[in-house]
Image 1: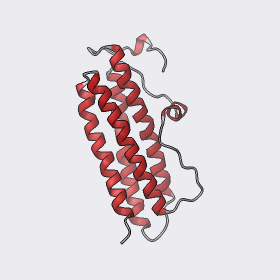
Image 2 (image 1 turned 45 degrees about the vertical axis):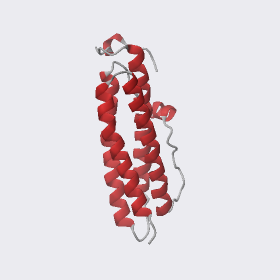
Image 3 (image 1 turned 120 degrees about the vertical axis):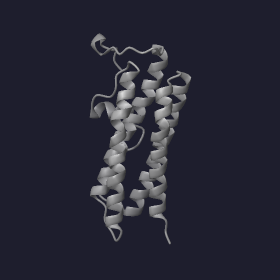
Image 4 (image 1 turned 90 degrees about the vertical axis):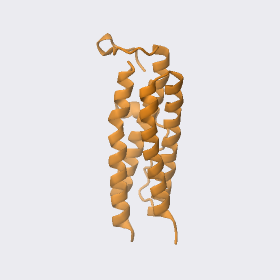
Length: 165
């Protein structure tokens, strides 16, 4: 990440070396949110089969929830005096959730892949939580709990929707 331009300098009482580790963790989570959002929308668009309507609506709801958290994550980065992701290329350099460019993915495989990706996002949020706690960044530490809960809920819904019988 580039040096902060003085025009973007944000006042904070947190030490800059601590906020840098929080910002790095937040930016990694942000990149994964964007990767997961696009994958969820992709699967929403390409859903097929007898449960089409239910899965299509589930993934639409989940993608809206995922994109909804991106602004809050980016704003936490800025509030700590750091800079956030700037482009699709920047996202791709930071994401840990793999893209899926397959021409066809079956509904069961879609749900399983998204479930695992949401659990990866939970792992990223736990890294954010640890970095925030170490930096005594109470605001980030508190808000990441809600993001974690939502990702866990998405994983649970995907698990339940994909159960057989």
